[in-house]
Image 1 (cartoon, one colour):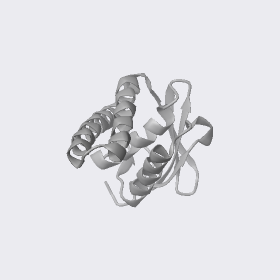
Image 2 (cartoon, rainbow, N blue to C red):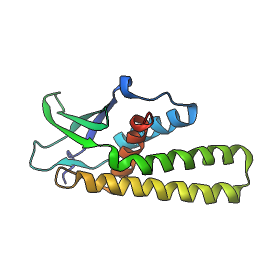
Image 3 (tube, rainbow, N blue to C red):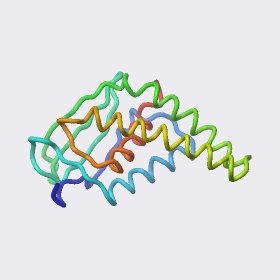
Length: 157
């Protein structure tokens, strides 16, 4: 991938965002910041980047609305969110435990919960990378950050 094969802007459709607490909102902002700082994102058999990405949720579908640097529409990918349902549910449960542990548990207990949280997050990131195979090529860190943003959109289900 060339240096231009990346996302330069991320927009999450506010109408599809769930009501988020301060921890989730912070995680979303950090994921967007990290994604824009360092990502690898290439559309296979489409126009070269850089890209502007808008993420939307409609019904039980995730929409990747991708535009070029000059806002010309490039492609729209639609993925079913059904395969993510269990992983996202598990991720939210472990995140709740993690945020509670930060406030009330020992560092050892926090570390154990955080390891489980990262494991579930990795599972979701791997699933996303699989679902994008043949459409969008990303590296693992980019898939992780995109999975965090999917969680932000998926929380209502």
